[in-house]
Image (cartoon, rainbow, N blue to C red; front, side):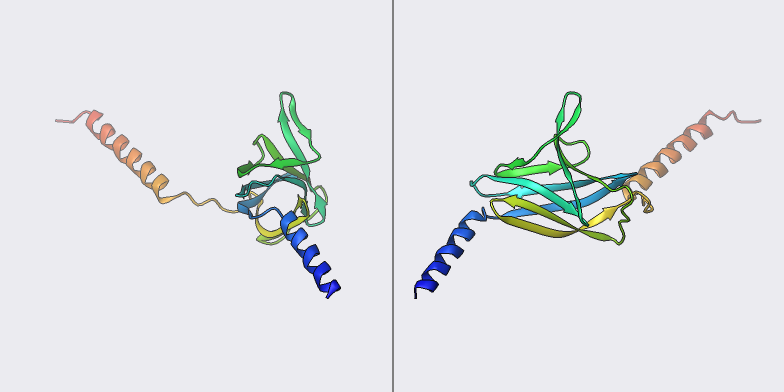
Length: 163
């Protein structure tokens, strides 16, 4: 009975320390030469403060960085407030990976976030190497065709008529 009570107390404490509901949305890894960046939206809906202390991509720990006037400076942790936190190559806070010599393969790669107090979030994230063919959207194609049609009409009207 005593062991059961201690186990329930321990599990209750761990569940409380988890910090609630945290989601990684629209995530992808952007690869640029010897660096990669986590581009994502981190959504947190609880009041309890959390901190992102580490992000790992295929065994490589990312560098947590904050934008300064002279560029980016490393951080030991990123505070997570209730709401939405955006990550990307040019955002106020970012996660950068040194991937020189690391071969990232596949359409997705595993990314693990270490959240304190005591939480792990692992998710398969799409890999964007920039080598995939870029398909223009239908709207862009229609806009280009419309512009060509207008220019062709103006050219025909401007062309002098022969008797």
